[in-house]
Length: 230
Image (cartoon, rainbow, N blue to C red; front, side, top):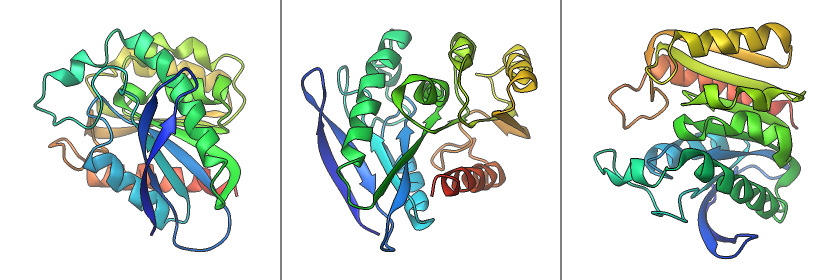
């Protein structure tokens, strides 16, 4: 499986790092852009990218925190919360980075021109924003945080959107899950999966709250959604 660490020129100036994992099999494939949690493009995100590539798809993981404090940070580092604030401004700046990452993918011979975006924790809102206005055909959120602030971004989205949480996620209390259940009830393109007994951060293998079964179910659904972009 070919792996590269690239530098992408940002449209507004500057450059940022991007981890790229390509499938070993020849031919063209869809891609997924991974919008990391505040820990950045760490070993957990790289592991997810590698698994996506092993499934026969392209995975790109840009550093969305390069304007503040770049690079991956350990969970014990207090700067993780500092570099993610003010949240809406950082999310907004990341929109351009995701579009620039998508433009980079279009230069890859293996890319078939169709892409999904998957957000983890901090990156969760991109599951709605990506299909809304950034050119992505599928949006996925795994244990997205502060998602109540972005539910309006679902308006007008017709692309598939998949939202995954645990029912013990302290970043998605019952009122948030209920709000998104209401969204699902009126938008057939949106699906919601709530795993019983699962906590926030379940996708991260380096996190003590990692849940292998919920992780496997989430990766299976991501693979199915990407297969729909072939």
